[in-house]
Length: 304
Ligand SMILES: [Zn+2]
Image 1 (tube, helix red, strand yellow):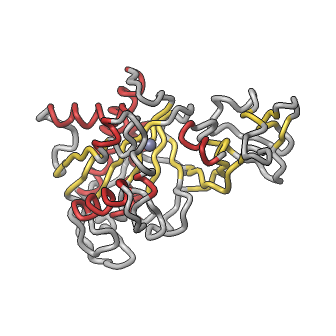
Image 2 (image 1 turned 30 degrees about the vertical axis):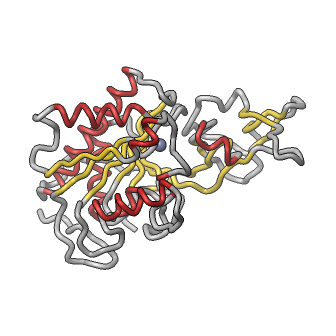
Image 3 (image 1 turned 45 degrees about the vertical axis):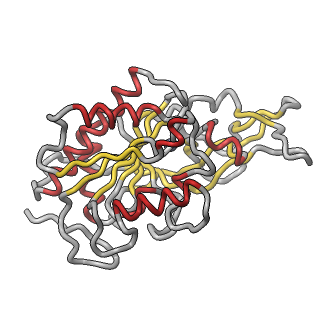
């Protein structure tokens, strides 16, 4: 069986995946991915043997400062042009791995390792749903079992500001719960398992192996909006996540069910018409933007 070649809107003849770059420390306070990359570097017999595996620690200055970033979020800087630390760093990483949008890039695939304080378990976020990415995702969820697939909140790869958006077949692995600036055995083990399973899936697709996993229809979670905290005139939040939502990422919420709990003791319900599946519930990194959670809806995984 011949699998579709590595598809890109710009280059239908792009070659199959050979090099995979595993990135840790895009966010300097997410120690799990940094630890996993450092362990891979120290072990010669790493997973993904038939692939050319490379590693990168993305933001050493932020790691040294034990902060998510120095000036601004590195993972919102790809394709933007300002003069802060992370924008310059994004340009340097783009030169090393990309360049973004080119028909030929220095690496064929990026796996960016992240953690979240939310209860999202193993979540994989592809940059797009070209046939190769879909083939990898189907195999990955067949191997891993507990992983969920979430789509990025941008229509096109060009508009995505993430390090993964440098090449069109790339994945963010988001593991939770993990507290910022803290290592937990459970999160490290979950991330290493997910990374091993993903490399196995990429390797199989890159080698053109037939998919005999018999994976039934796979669900992906598509972001449809964010729930913001109500604020007072000074911009201070007036509510918190409702107890019924806390720690219940991906669980369905019907219209009228609680999302937030105001400081006055009132429920803020889900006011939409359909059932939603909140994720990133009470994500620490989203608090400065006033985001309480991201709402998603499940849709079938199909190339598109
Ligand atoms: Zn992160």
